[in-house]
Amino acid sequence: MLIYYVLPLIVAAGVLGGLINAFSPDTLLEKQLSPTQYVMRGVAAALLVPFFLHMISSNLIIDISGDVMTPQVMDRLLELTGFCLAASISSRAFIRTVTGQMLSRLKDVESNAKRANEKSDDAEEKSSAAQREAALAVAKATQAVALTSDTQEADESPIPGAAVSEVPEVSELEGRVLLAMVGSEFSRRTLSGLAQELALTRNAVRGLVQHLAQVGLLEEVPGKKDEIPRWRLTGSGREFAFSLVPKLRPTKPS
Image 1 (spheres, rainbow, N blue to C red):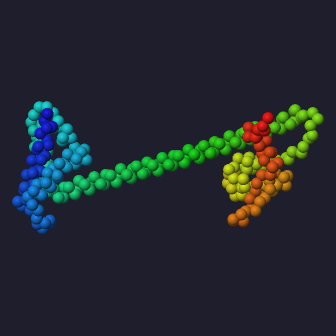
Image 2 (image 1 turned 180 degrees about the horizontal axis):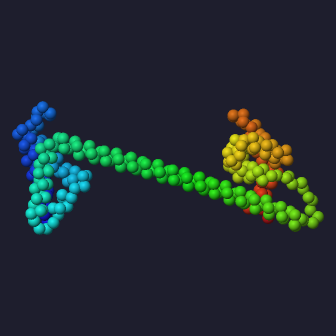
Image 3 (image 1 turned 30 degrees about the horizontal axis):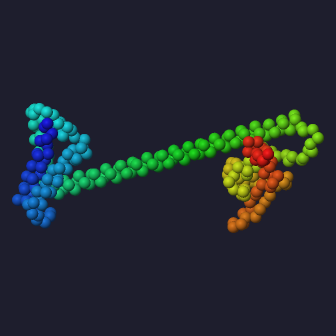
């Protein structure tokens, strides 16, 4: 195959360019080197030519990969030889140029990868936010169904002979406060935390919490470090909160 002519031509051009530099050195730009050093640098520069051609998307090497020596292929071989000879003669500048472009491309690849990771993180955050909103919507719907079901059962099927205990009357917003309390990983909640979770103002939450405390479902506890008062469920408040969502009611051992 004609491609086997490429490597000998590249090496030969590199050796020739190195000898040219050895016999006519530019001592103003660099110190005098030995002929062997000039030849080695010339060959190295010539071997970088295929890589440089790939960087600029040239098809010069591909055009030589045929099986028949045609005038067009001979022209491409001479073109490659001239390119390698020019690179070896200016080996010092050519090597610096190619390596500089390679490092620049590596930085661009790293920058693109970083931007792709940032976009992926943003997409994950948006997905998590959407899941939280969906979970909140499901909780609200479950709460409404549970309140309606409990009311109908209390009205339609009273237990004969059972003692009727006083059940506190709570509004829908107060029921949401109780569900937020019982579903939280914290046993004590601040007004600010509840307001943020329920998307209500702090003053509105304060009024709801105070009424729940009056009916014995919540109690205020002092803060330990920041002196900010916190609220927690009482025993009856926890039972009442579980009754709002029957599937969360703790089961008793038989």
